Image 1 (cartoon, rainbow, N blue to C red):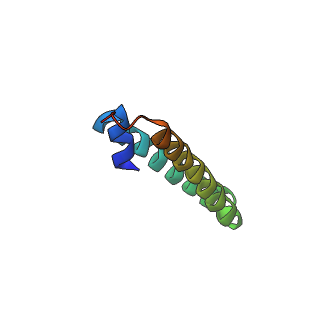
Image 2: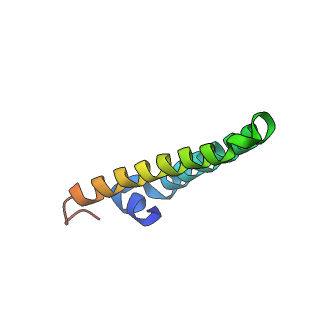
Image 3: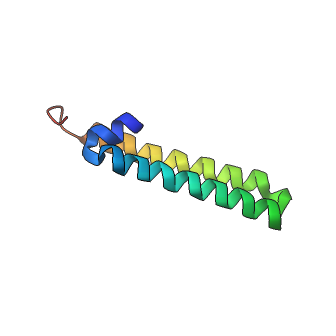
Length: 71
């Protein structure tokens, strides 16, 4: 998905920003869940899996819709 984002015009900076936001979100929510409700860890993991899956599905959607001539 890194390559797809980059080739769709996001560049290295935009793609790295996208992944950095995901990393910060997952790590922050993991630490918060560990501190507040450790038993809810599996629910938070499932929520992030769904969110990342939806984001990657969106990338796939835009990847398929782009014209073959685009870089």
